[in-house]
Length: 144
Image (cartoon, rainbow, N blue to C red; front, side):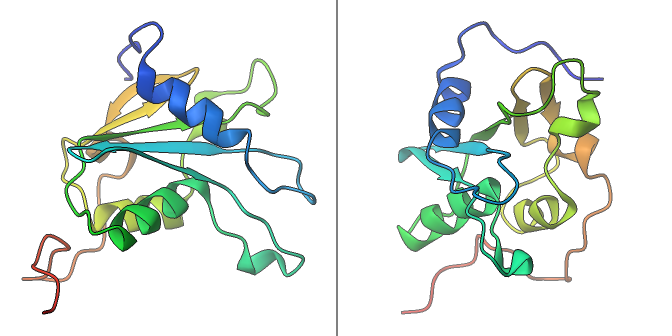
């Protein structure tokens, strides 16, 4: 069961702003993500492609940008889907399976996931059984 979001949470506001930059000429369905950590905030938006399978989701865009900038420790993520129809069930606002698995590489079970319009979840509430290889974690030191 989600916990209510704090009114005017700045990370949710960042996710809403990120959604405004989405490139969605095919689906017209914008998604924004804001990843918070000791570095501040890194935004991501979904970017579509005429070859539909080549599209990338907002959550993965934010994570890839953060890792490319040298970050591997994150505090929480906020996700905004401003084009979800009013009255949509909470499942219409959740990250896709690929994004959940991608997050699992970098976050723990208690990692906060803020879903605009739905509430706050622990990561293990939205993805209870991620695939994780034994003895491997993204928090390992980057190669020299």
